[in-house]
Image (cartoon, rainbow, N blue to C red; front, side, top):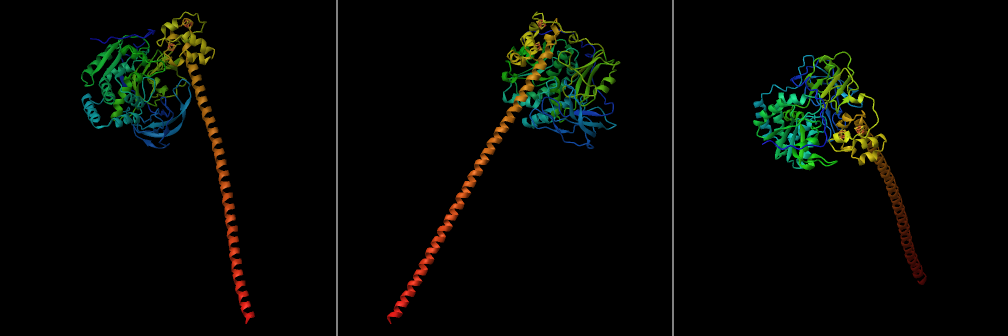
Length: 529
Ligand code: SF4
Ligand code: SF4
C-alpha cells in the first residue's frame, strides 16, 4: 500500500528546464591544469586556520585546515600538489566578497579526484559492514566531521553536528531528501541513478547512528529513473528504506515542506525538525557520509552545468576549489554570457566573479545568454492581488512583509515572521507587478542579523567595560586593604619595639638599682666597721 501523502500550502509549478542535463550521466571533471583555490570559509561556520604553508607538498585527501567551533569543518586537498599561496581570493557568495584561500597547483600527472565509481557495491558493502561493526558511534561521527561533510543541498550545516543533535533527541523518522525541486538542477537525480548503492550505504550509516523507526526517501515523481534505481538498491539493504514518490511542486524539497508531505507534521515557527524527532539529510550529503566513513573526505561534489550559454551542459563530479571560468569553458561557454546563476533560478544568486571557485555548497551553475528572470523587468506598484500569499509555502503574508521591509520597519517584519521565510522566491515568481519581494526579505534579514551582531558586540564591549571597572575597583580596594594591613603591621611592630625597649630599659634600671643597692649595702657595711 502506498504511503498517504499530505500537501503544504501554496507552491508553484515553474517550467522545469531539466531536459538539457537529466539524461547526461555524472562524469568526473578532469582538472585542466592551473591552480585550485580552496576557500578556508565554507558552509555556515567561522573560517578555518590553514595547517599547511606555502611551498608544502600535499597529498590528495590531506587535511589543509583546522577549525575551532562545532559549526566548522576542515577542508582537504583534492589532488596531490604544491601549496603556492595562502591569500584572499574571490569567494562564490552572493556578496562577492573575498576569503582567505589555500591555492594548490596539482601535480602534472594528476588524475581526477577520489574514486566514486570504481568500488564494486559488494566490496563496499562488506567493508562498510565491517566498519559499522567495529567502530564506535563517536568514531563514526568524528569521521564525518573530520571528513569535512556539510549539508550539500545548499544549507551548508555541519552534518556531524546535526547527527549529534539527532542522537540526543532519539530520532524516530529519518528523511532522505531526493526531491531536487528547483528548475535546471539534475545532479541529485543523476547521483541517485548513477550511485544508488553508495547512497544506500550512507543511509545505512545513519541508520546505525540514529536507529530511527522509519526511513523515508522522498523523490519527486518527475524523476522516475531515480525512483526505480533507488527502489532497486533499497531492496538489497537491511535498513528498511521506503522510497516515496512525491508530486512535483516547487518547493517540495524544502526541509519543512518535505516533512509535511511525508509525515503530515508541521515544524513550528522558529522550530527545528529534531524537535519532532525527525532528521533530514540530502542524498548528496548521504553519499558523502558513506565516503567519509571509508576515510575519503569531501574533496569533490556533483554539479549541474546548464543554460543556453553552454554548448555541452552536463553533470560532473568537480573538485572543490576548481575555478569556475575554465570549468564553464570546458562545457563550451558560448560567447560572453549575460549571467551566471549559482544554484537554481529560484533560490540561487548571480555569480559576481568568474574567477571564484567551486565550494562545497555549489550544486549548479546556470549560464544564460539572455536575461529571462522576472526580476529583470521593471517593478510596478503592488496591486494587492494576494497572489503572493496564495503561493507562499510557509503561509506568510508576503505583501505585508514587503510593506514592512520596504519601510525598513524591521520590528514589524519580524512580527510577520520574517525569519520563517525560506527565501523560496514563489512570491516574486507569481507577482504580476514584478516586485523583487524575496530580495527585500533577504536584505531585511541581513540587516537584522547585522543589527543583532552589532548589539551582541556592544553588549560584549559594555560587559568588558563593566568587568574592567569592577576589576579596577576590586584591585583598588585590595590595594587599600593591603596598605592598611601594612600600616597596622608597622604600627604594631613599632609598638612592640617600643614596649620591648621599655621593658629592656626597666630591666636595665632594675639591674642598676640592684647594683646600686649592693654598692650601698657594701658602703654601709664598711661604715659600720
Ligand atoms: S503578488 Fe505582488 S502585486 Fe500581488 S499582492 Fe503580492 S506583492 Fe502585491
Ligand atoms: S520567499 Fe518567503 S515570503 Fe516569499 S513565498 Fe517563499 S517563504 Fe513565502
